[in-house]
Image (cartoon, rainbow, N blue to C red; front, side, top):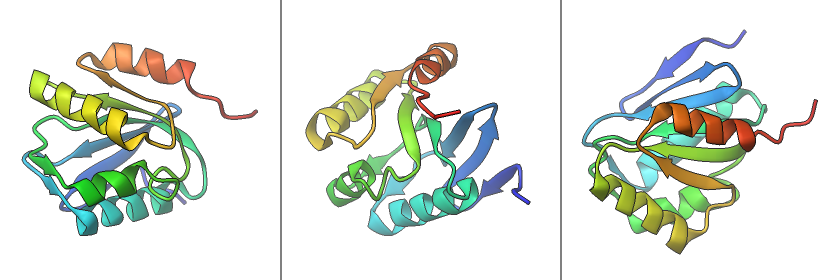
Length: 130
């Protein structure tokens, strides 16, 4: 049976309706070991089911280039249909828009400051079959 929430030193994962929610720890520095652990735990948590994901990256400190490349890859986006990044500052918004533009993630991505707008966008990108 799938648990409702998992948490490690880097992120929390839970499911709200049909959306996988991910909240990264504040002031986190994401490098390859961190992103690989987060992706591995996400894949295990979702047990082969694909979801749209709301990724709360508020207060993220740093994301290394190799970690960004991995996260944008087919392997890093496994079982994801779309990602809405939730930010709180213009710097975070700029950082994620640059990530999307440079790394071309394997799934549709967008950046939002408002959770409701992010969830609306995700519902439009939920292309799961019945």
